[in-house]
Image (cartoon, rainbow, N blue to C red):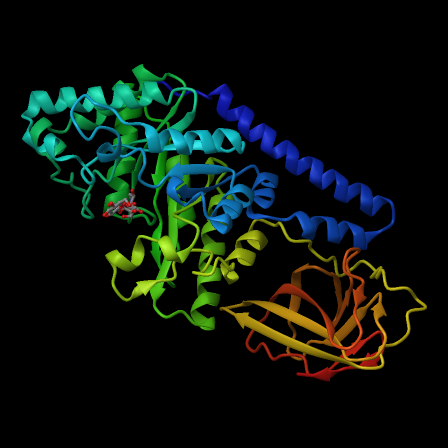
Length: 485
Ligand code: G2I
């Protein structure tokens, strides 16, 4: 069998992890220097999906449309949040070989250049797929089609050799019942079309990882078992295959309970696994309850991947809901991605960071070390707005403190009691600790001041609850009671 561990891929992972380690080191030094507040603030200020995933040694990827890179928000999120890009459409057959033997790499090259210039891994998608085929392919007989398949693979893999670290060589080759999809490749070439594709790709670039990719294979079911059996068969016969992609185009509330076990059974065959096209759709419009469920669902997928050491990472199938493929394919459904149509992060964003272990985690047993000056005067007027969205056993809260007094607050400590046994698991933009029901949130190093006459600060937290999740009914700011909005 031809398993391998490409040096280029390993270097990329090591480099990104090193960045995470440096960040962690800075946090540790700050804490050692005696400022837990600074530690929390550093971590919160720099935390992105990418820094959180890097620290866990996982890729966090996005399907990219190079035509959108001119949009500031799109570009900025792509730049900051992701460590891997996959062209959503730019490397497909219709985009790259619209006329037989004539290859157009313009859009694919744009994605490759973007990945290279921003230090991201480039994942190739997809070499052979029954969909988005140019018309000329359908006119070929079996022998000509096999020759065209090999030519297409050889040209693409050679062109992107050294840039693409892994390829979806074959996409969506199976039916839900585990039988082969009756695509043009299957009907005209026969069963061997898949192994011919993998062998051809390996010959064109011996260092790229070669994957098979499909949807509705996230659970243990007839379709995923068919791919499992293909991997076993290829491995036994020495046909190259390195990885299996699980698209995970999921429906709200329907993350398979056996996702982790499914990933693990493939990993146990000796191949890498990856969540390749994650999105979680809902009936539109969205609302706070659906978004909270979606956040929990995204977190579950991340948690499953983290639990499987051969799971390379998670790729989300786009940035903003505006450009998602979902509404045009499933009318009445959408809101499937992590950023909404205004590019605002949805609750799923914080949930993914939290699942990656990225947000600063308070340690309840440690005595709080607020940065508020002991001499800071009690606030003479303040109000607090506390909102939360919750799912089964978790919640995300947003807390806004407004200074209604005539003088600024410099150094703040907000305290409240949780009425129904809630526990804080992560917090950001504050240094938050908990002792029993009492939560103490102090300013981070960078946000100590609340301006007079209506200035405000906002911070957030994730928590766990059981049964009820009642909001706190009173708050004190530097010891003085605040109005509750
Ligand atoms: O269908 C969702 C995904 C399922 N797995 C394989 C993926 O490659 C697939 O991605 C989608 C893209 O997100 C869509 O953007 O594949 C679709 C094609 O089946 C893509 O849609 C196509 C439109 O159908 C075309 O009309 C359009 O010209 O995108 C093309 C480029 O914008």
